[in-house]
Length: 313
Image (tube, rainbow, N blue to C red):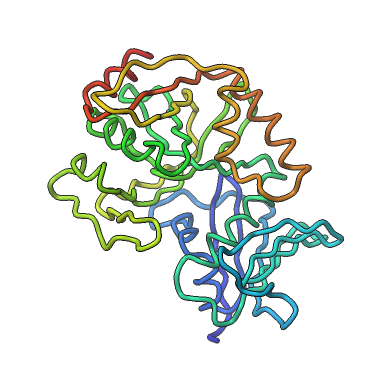
């Protein structure tokens, strides 16, 4: 292990300080590193930070390895999250989080995706910052951001790339932090490169070459399309729910009530504390009461998808 490290993240306007052995912190962060302030960014928010401590796991801190690896919520005290073969995240009395990670955890995104991200999402929910699995697209007129929450294989990336071609600004392909009161929600996009499968390759610009294909997900990252980091959370315009269909696609139709809440709630990281999960559902229901939600049939014609969304203006 190398010496200690202290790295700063900004998520939904909240500062997160990650401390611990440098190489273990790097493995625990993985894609979270995209949330670090860069040269020229606004300074991190003032005030107390959420502190995440990263430590080498002891013999009793790592549940046995299993396939598939499962992340579980364990009621306290102290409350904690455990992930098979990776480690444990404990929610400390001082408001911080302690991540105890297997010393030989693979140098990929395993520790981040299975332990660090769920743990930080759980901690930030308690401050009103909700991690959403959704693409974020700024409308061409600049009047707010469309969120495209969708499960894998439902057409989220395909719709996002279609709208990007039509002039929407791709701010995030996969995740964002929802903040603010329900009647004025804002989104802090998480700037990651989009990952595309065979269906979406034709939507890439000629100079945007995909990288190696992930053997598990079957998709390839497109680093050239990595979005910029926005300086502050942006107003949410509404929600688009894609559904892949044969043919060119079709017009958008409004969705309300439980039909809107169910697919969106399933894409918020709520697989942990039942109490914060319930509060998250109530918050999302209130957001959906204040913002429009539309179902979008996504086919193979980008012009049809762009016209469907343009008509919503």
